[in-house]
Image 1 (cartoon, rainbow, N blue to C red):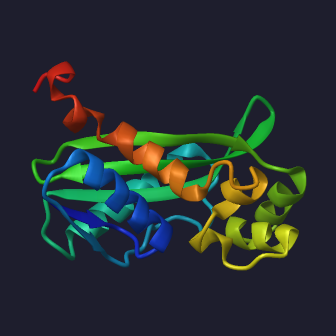
Image 2: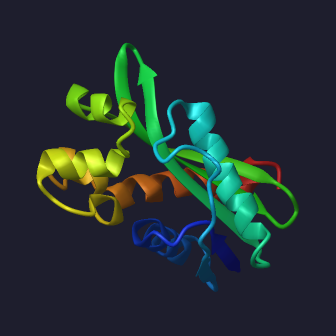
Image 3: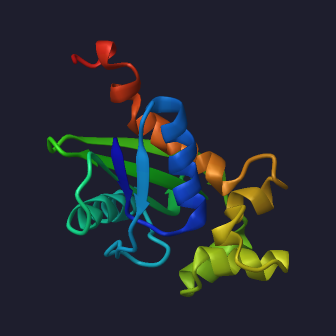
Length: 174
């Protein structure tokens, strides 16, 4: 199983490797640097999912594989609260799409204000935490949960959900 990831971000790539090791007996993960076609911090689920799909599609144009994985995080408003969320879009060589979400975590107003002013979410988290490059490590989730959960956990959850049709094909008509 050749799994092409539309990102070279080490957190995303490691999440894909970890989940593939639990789902597939024989696999190769190939990270590819591609553009998401959306803002640095997408706002709203349509833009986030579009970014994930673009990453998967753009990866498919660079490397031939069996599965193409696009992962995109961003912020969404629900119940008058801003949340960070992560979406995974998986495109397979037969043209089938599947999707998964890594959950929703409320964001502090200070962080949302920075993002709305044009600061990337990862940079905003670095500013409030005093850390650096959190987007390449624990992410906003790790900082705000004090590592009870991390960015990788969110990506792994999103990918598992996107792969349920492969994990349990008997329930998905195939």
